[in-house]
Length: 443
Image (cartoon, rainbow, N blue to C red):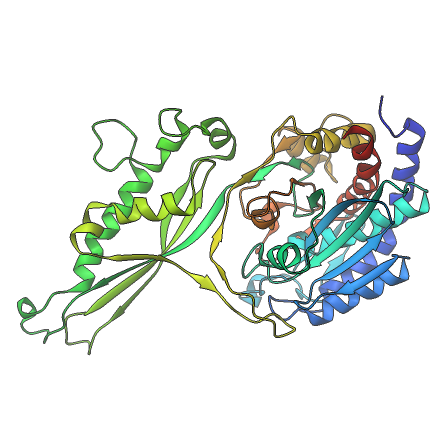
């Protein structure tokens, strides 16, 4: 039997529905404030204003510029995370409306950041308000709703600071990244890798006198392509990353099959040469490496270092670092390593969210329109993200259980004409309000 009665579930839903207009206004206010990574001051201040208005017990802006709103005073700390920075708008000609003014109709809200992911902080703030309204807060738990910065630039950096410098470590965290109406329990990790190879320049009229770094890199590129595309047969010289889906190569193969195989692709290429009439004396590439369960930063670097042509040419393999100042001018350097994470399907946090969801909405995903409802119902309720989230730090680096349920759609992220749905905001606020009581009874 659930810690929340059927009558209480209905009260939570009614309260969330009653705040639909408030949530819509709040989100549209946020959209109007451009908030690309490291430029989030205005939107952080607007979130703090809303938290104070709806009755949060304490609201802080930390030295990095994250905003943290606390509701309740209990011992168990439960986190609700929403990154509030956005990417840019790209080519404005691809938008059918002003991305910062946005629009709304009876069902949708459009604008940059609606799905990715300022809608999440809106539902988080009002989910906590519903807890207070309905007397669900008690001496067992405290909720911290966190609006985090710089995720689009360096996912998880904000939570590295929160955990390691502010010493704030919730018992678990709900990520409010968009989940298309589902509950998401993990994602593939990623790394940003650099490969450098050197050559010797000479006049282009006699290239045999030099040692062309671009030619060397051309051979290395073929090895990297093979690593991504090859099979894992014993006879294959460079075994493909697909091998990590097999028990033979990966003790975590079951979770790897759930999350999907790792990939590697070349994302950038650079060179140096004295002129257009000379042999190139250096060449470098950037690699986007997506990691599945069972892969680590050491294993990913080593597999590149062991490629035949990387060894042949003595290429240097390294990982990028991130050290861009936050909007408060705080610099918190970190490696560009964003580990894979997955919470077990039988974990108490997973079961808690499923129990809350089923008590509120039933056993299938819900969509805001008949067409979207049909699409969502064809997918499992509990699934995973394709993209990366702050969970790479929350659970991946710090071991804090993390799970996702958030308004909007992953496919809307970074796209022109981005939008979310009002009913998603309502449903997410309702679920956030119900989860802590159920978790404290279940744990």
